[in-house]
Image 1: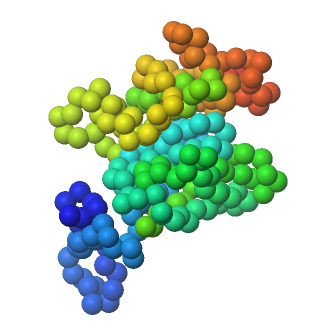
Image 2: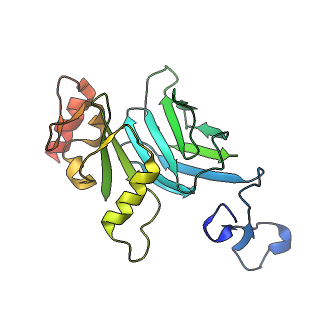
Length: 130
Length: 94
């Protein structure tokens, strides 16, 4: 069974072979495919979080300045995931693993300015792979 | 937009903003329950759901100063930073 509802995810094919062809197409990505991204999001974390685009994200929990959780719709197969995350401009982001350990459905983010103060960047970009 | 609010063990407030869409025909309460379950907040107490429009009157960026008084979310001025208090004043002027 695929990780994604319906077992497939729509993608845009920009290859020359598909120029003028029907878009988008769908490809099946099994949950065990470690080459596939399992979730991603691009959002504004300031004030009320505003999502520009996302995949497999259920919600965002705001715990205070610079402290937010990205919660997944479909949990990963286990908690041994890895992520890439960045802000924009001088803001940067790290993933905060709680003392209780990583879970298979929540990515905890801590976001800072380059001077080390907690902040809520206007752009947060996160990808999750497992 | 309805959001889910939580009281953490240390008294701070967390807010969960739904991202995934409501299913066709799904009651709002069931939708928020589903989102809340996936937010995975086992140590937090779920408070009544709030509408962001109502929260905006308090200044959404002042969340670190929010407290639950047993009936409503309130701002504790002693915890609020000068910037947060300014945000509250600004929000109430709007």
